[in-house]
Image (cartoon, rainbow, N blue to C red; front, side, top):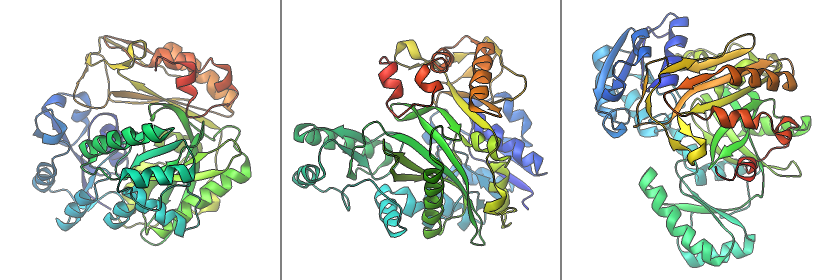
Length: 448
């Protein structure tokens, strides 16, 4: 087991990793930018090192500075968290070439799965269903129009690299396809330094179901069941839960088995998530793999009782998985609300600033993952996530009731948050009945 680990991230996930390391008796080195200097969670690390000014490109995305900090601090491994460099295969390769273990998958698997076009090919080889679409990248408009007409509109233009909805456009005719191609390429080039795109059939009002997997270096791979992630705004998740409501047992089993086949085919180990779309007939289609820990990983932790971050560390240290597939079960119902420093009433405008009052909820069945306290200043430089509010109860109706209570107790002043929107969601009849899809938010809250 490692004796000393560096956390190459910030905020809530940095604190999550710090706690997991301390639970394992491991010392932790935290890095921070000038924007995060003085953040309370840094005091919980055994050492904290400044790696640059506020812009992420000069700090949390600056590989030389992170490697220098790791070497100065004499760590044996780096945990990248999520976002920033977590899915950067080049960073993983540099870490390992410097004899510092990267707590994540092998870089070759990251490269194969990080490119959506390559991941799609691998899925087909593993007999995992994929959305009908182009067999490769789209080189020109004429080819795109011909293919879209053959597939049938609407089609989805997707960036081959990256995620989060960037480099993605829906086209419903030839004209919107041509304009969408240019816009998607420009956005993908700016976001990922890779402007390549491909086409898929656009599935109308699908559900977004993802499967958590763990694999070790000894060839063992297991799934930890599914999460419902359909409640999204502009491809950014707002609410996640497990088990997914109203998902037939045979479909659940088939999706989970497909995820295991895919990551085995990729030679993958450590934590990862396979994402799928499910249509109105419960047919499912693979869309991508997130080769890292997910924001919503606590949902799975609550229903399985397995600490995913601890498992990541143990796997990276070469330990085999301590459980078989048959030993993993879903218990009860867990739901997560992402609490962002945004104003839902003003088109989700970011709301950085100082938190003048932070009164979190509590009580049985409530978990709050956050780095925020009263007096904390939310910087304008990074993602707006300030907390993840979770509940775990024996049944979904009980979980919904618990979340309503927790949201009513949660008081934040000094910044705007998404708490008011979550309170509305948990009163909506369709959500309560589990009748959701990826267009649920935009249909019921058009201002979003």
